[in-house]
Amino acid sequence: MLVRALRDAGFDVAYTGIRRTPEQIAAQAAEHGAELVGISILSGAHMELVPRVLDALQRRGMGEVPVMAGGIIPEADRRALLEMGVVAVHGPGSRTGEIAEAIRATVEARRGR
Picture 1 (cartoon, rainbow, N blue to C red):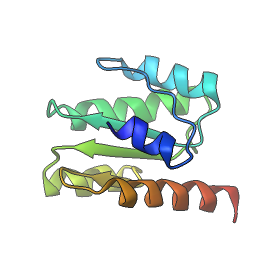
Picture 2: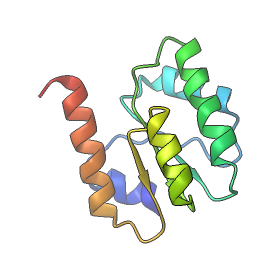
Picture 3: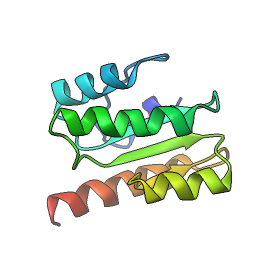
């Protein structure tokens, strides 16, 4: 599981579980002081849910928190997600080390390192 691999890589991961609303995801991100939000969507609803998560984060004053997405996402949708502000999209076959490095680089850049 990705959560375990990211914890093993030294990240503090707050897993929300499955079938959470965008508002629940944003609330948990706020509660934990998230430096990055990662969303994995296998249902095909990424073009509906990710923009709603971005909006929910914005409403909570967390619009600057980077969002990464993962799942089975067609190339055209990947481009659209990146254009709306998602910092990275990881699909099937993405290596855990690549995901961890992308998270680390994103968080460090946000911290100004």
